Image (cartoon, one colour):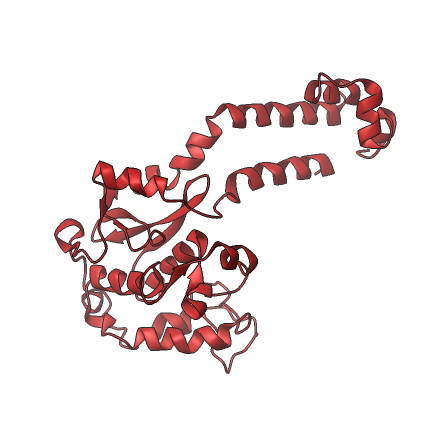
Length: 286
């Protein structure tokens, strides 16, 4: 693939996928007024139900650390590349896992999740890594500057929506609950959690507010993506990508391409910004 295509594809992905950096309060306030969220500490079992008891579904699993051992290297396994039973590589024991691993063990032994229903397991995970629980604090600086660290909230009690949602989804997985972090808007991540046969939107970011809205899983998971690609912004970007492809194929000249992008610029201004002539620029893609 030519470099321009790679660059444009990366631009598209960045515009869509990497906008999950933080969340404000206006979005949550709107949901509260609409009656689609539950207040901190509320017992949501009357809304979400209890779901399935883990031991009833998986009587063969009795070790609280079963999924931890399935998905994460132990201290003894270190940074080895180890495939699990699903044919996927386990998370290596690095990048602060020496701090996170004992905390994960502590959580998995903090209640009898093997014999608990899905709601109880989800609730315990929420209260361990959700904002305003367990001393957890919304901290945009930590979320930005330490975003590559594993289990930032679990270890430091600081993070923002990306960390809160990703860690809730991962912690739920370790107690056998289906939970997925997803892009709910341009600047926010939430989670979808399955209790029984129903999926719910939950938000571990906003000071303990719990969203108990039942949703269609596929529709909600892809909602923002579909809204974005139907937007005028996305249509303009797609047109730019298409024009770039035409220039690569020789269907239009690079001069035509750049004048399409910058109609108010002269040839001299465009080539000055490029640092080369149109012909020299075109030779880069041959």
